[in-house]
Amino acid sequence: VGVTGIRRWHAEHAWLPGQGVATDVLIEASHGRFTAVTTGTRRPADATSLPGLTLPGFANAHSHAFHRALRSVTGGSDFWGWRSVMYSVAERLDPDSYHRLARAVYAEMALAGISCVGEFHYVHDGTNAYGHVLMEAAREAGLRITLLDTCYLTSGVSGEPVTGVQRRFSDGTADGWLRRVSEFGAVPPHGRLGAAIHSVRAVPPAGMRVVAGWAHEQAAPLHAHLSEQPAENQDCLAAYGQTPAAVLDSAGALGPRATMVHATHLTSDDVRLLGESQTTCCFCPTTEADLGDGIGPSLALSDAGAPLSLGSDGHAVIDPLQEARLLEWGQRYVLGRRGVFPMTSLGAAATSAGHACLGWPDAGEIVPGAHADLVTVDLASVRTATGARRVGPAGPGAPDIGADGLLATVFLAATAADIRHVVISGRDVVHDGRHLLIPDVAAELATAIGAVL
Ligand SMILES: [Zn+2]
Image 1 (spheres, helix red, strand yellow):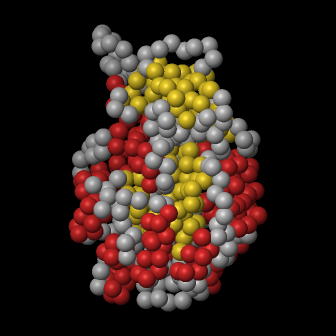
Image 2 (image 1 turned 45 degrees about the vertical axis):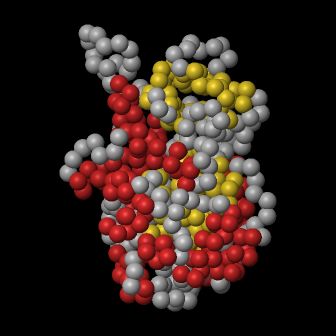
Image 3 (image 1 turned 30 degrees about the horizontal axis):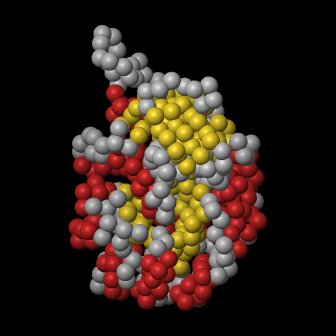
């Protein structure tokens, strides 16, 4: 993805670590990395102008690309009903149709400001062909990707065998998974290979240990779905006498390189376990709303020491700003108060914490040395326009909206439709709201989805 040569952008406003929102920011990059960030300076003639608020690139820490096909499907009255519809799409995927679909979905992500996707990948027929296709789809759409190659062995906590389309998810045994992942081959520069334990339903503890062992050995990210549904917890308690978080902990699957996705139905012991082990918790609030999963204890987890990241999971929408908003609003519903997370915490969940949990700790901040990812949000759209002065000394007239106000405008009111420019590893991928590599993303989505529905 990276490009050689020196690039310069001049941001009207930019969110910088430790400084809040700065004004008139000259941002320079070379070979896909930031080299210098200078505030309060005029635009040099050769710098691309970025009017609005510029943020680091967003990380989508949890995606199943093919679920995008289900967006307009209303079937299934709950999670389990929805899952059976999802299985019927999984049945029809082949490497070609999956390539076209993923490329269009990743292009939609770029338009929403996402510079790196964590693909929790489980439809593989026991081969690496699909994994390579997904990496290629991300490259064509201009994104970096962490392929979280998923172990899936059983259809229930008691070791029930996989049936029907689930057979496409299985490597037979954990050693089969290990053998396949070890044979993945070369990983391109825009990619990373990570591991995933699908859930306590799909991998017994002995298998979890094999997957976690590989991830530790490779210093690779390790992800798992955790306690999305109460039924999963009940089955797990019945089988092991422990919660899913405790079972995963006993198998060595928690820790600073691990990410637990959803973390919806937790005990206070689970929260302590996840916080003390510094396990990242990835919330997917629009999907959790769409499926009626519930609202997980994100504030308690964060207070306990767990970093938070965000994912679009089933792609009910692809919009990191809406995920961040619903993370905050979910806690407002539950706790009955406003201002639960500082705006900078919502920003960190969408950016630095997300990239870090995908194995890219050198991305997600506008600082020299980091991947040169930028997202510019329009501050003059129908959603973001305000009469308040954005910057400048206090004086008569309109009140100063301030740095927090600017971030609040973006995280609580803007949508993906307000994203004007996206730079990924130093390369312009979206300009004026248009994808520069894939001219008609909507048409590609329609064609690709039509082929698998
Ligand atoms: Zn998921």
